[in-house]
Image (cartoon, rainbow, N blue to C red; front, side, top):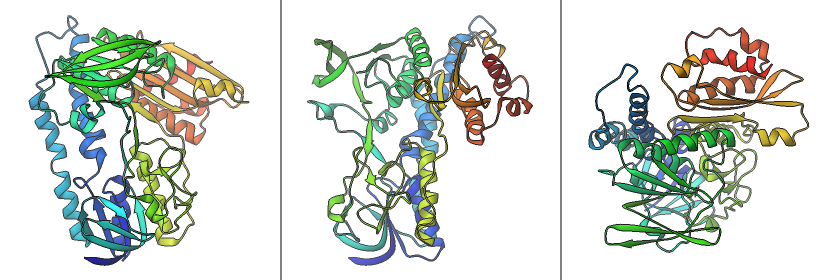
Length: 453
């Protein structure tokens, strides 16, 4: 079948769905394609189901910290029940998404999209033509080229496990590995993390990560640093990961190996046939309007686009908003990214926004770095929190916060307050004028600022 459209969107996640719906409502003819179930990664195989599962791990951690301090009795995570609860969030998404597209009159295609030309996309036996094409295919686990790579499961597989095995090995020490490691340890699995660098979660503040590593070890997570994964083997039901540290061979065995060695743009769509050039990081090379620099008919958003922004869901939303305006009204809306907060949902959580200490050292600004462990503060002492700290990077001349880094069970909420303050360039005095409900985590912000002075 051959059919012509004003717009073809590849990908039904946050960026793709928003763009398709907006253009359809503006009167365009629109087709949307996905090789997987409709709805994208975040609500089905990423952020949302992960957060549901992590909630149970946080509850177990809370109970263990408070044992003998008012809480008693045995408790455990029933993995099958937890997974059934998770599915109440994820299972309705594909049908609901497809139903919404049909109601709007968006033509949906299932299958792998491949460029045939600058304006043509093949999906199975169908070849469709679009005046404009938006690539919003998201990311996928990076291909490593290791022997036995196919023996590792990916994050979406982990989120669908019917039961957790006794021992799990996580290859890599990024978001996926550390978040799932904390979850699995609270369920009762033996957990090992193999990471090639000096510390896991390299995007976050080193001092806070060091505290998190200590806390991770306290709950039974074994973290092997400066260790490279070289290959994976399977003998019967047992997996063997062969690694290397300082030239010496290392061997790890477990019942499951999880790929946590990074993700890359999912662009197995024959971009060269569409004259779509990719950048050094594997994303679509785009201009300030998120338009392909080599094919003006094509735009890219979210993880598919090669930009300065981190691969996070809010960026997909910001990108799609700009792409929608540029499609409907011409290239008049350049993409502008404010400071972007990031959180790893370990237990406790770790969050970051703005300038790092390393960046502060290299900057020409007059900066101050304030670091403090705060388990003795009421917010954390009342729940016997074992690891809590913050680091603020401040501009001493202007009296503003340039960067904030937090390790605590409420880091995900606190980091958003600092994100607002940094974006609006609020001074310490302005921030202190805000009255927060007390006692809450946010009411500690004034105390954090007092530590700076």
